[in-house]
Amino acid sequence: MPALTIAPEQLLDFGVAWTAKGGSLGRTSPFSSSDLGRLFDVTVGRALAAMLGGIPIDYAPSATALKPAQPDCVEVGPVRVIGGVRPQNFDVGYRPDGIRFTFDSKTLNDAKSVGKNWQNMVNDLATEATMVHTRFPHAVVGFMVIIPAPCISPARLSALVQTLERLTGRTNVSDSFHRAEVAALVIWNPDTGELSGEAPRADSPLRLESFSAQVQAIYNSRYKGLPPHAGE
Image (cartoon, rainbow, N blue to C red; front, side, top):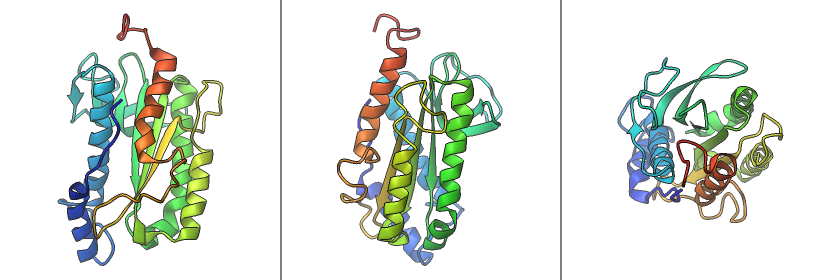
């Protein structure tokens, strides 16, 4: 799976919008909070499609469809999953015979939102992972949390990193359902559009540059050689 790369120029206009609104992103395009999440969703979807052999991407799946519109494609949200807890729409999915890969991005875009919502967001991630794994224990579940650097204090960043690290790394199908297989924490600078080189630390499994390798290793361990990849 190709490494996920987001160039500074892709985020710079979001930074301009963030600054213009006094340290927040609006909900109306262009350069809204949803647009920011979509940028990362598309990046993940394209890398996943490349890993799977250059298969097609459906960029506008039906929010209510229980199967993909094409027999073997990556879907870039909304992807409907009927799990063991509740129905849920995810941002990226691959479901040729049921869910094999599902992904959600979460953006917290101002200091107030980070302070009020980060713990609730963590609870949501654990619930989403549980919801998928109770019906699809072999599914690879991925998450990404995206936060502007000025919005999070060092102490809160440390707490978030430690919490997310506890909720990821599900390598065996017998592991706890509430854990995700892979997660990334993206801290970005609104002034430059650059991603932080310091947080999370270089050896953390939450680094964006390690996301793809983790997905590929886990996916291969569960599905390599099985249809529609038979003979690969």
